[in-house]
Image (tube, rainbow, N blue to C red; front, side, top):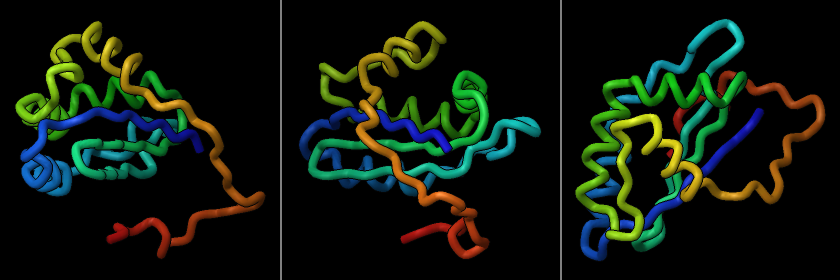
Amino acid sequence: MPRYAVTFRVRPGTEEAVEKLLSSYDPPQPQIDENTRLVSTSVFMRGGTVVRMIEFEGAFPKIMAHLSQDPSIQYVERELDKYLVEEDKRDMSTPEGARAFFAKAMMKTVTSRIPEGYVPTAASAGKHE
């Protein structure tokens, strides 16, 4: 399953508000079509650095198009703009702006290891705290 991560920075003193925002929004609908689905999303923070990760099955462009149209994601992206450091500001209101952001913020995958034959169980599909 492919995984992608983006990173960006928030202004000092806004970390608590960003953590609350990123931990409380409604998740997007995971199933897009019979071949494309969002498997998981994760957010990591340390100080003012945020890493958002998605794991999915199917075509990445379909995933991104789906997420960009989701009202909950649109809301969280607009709210995040209030907290970003100036160098990481972005325009997520247009496809061009979103592409520019992802080109700049996408992290390089160094390795992604899934044991051969691994099949997710019902227990591993739940929310992890």
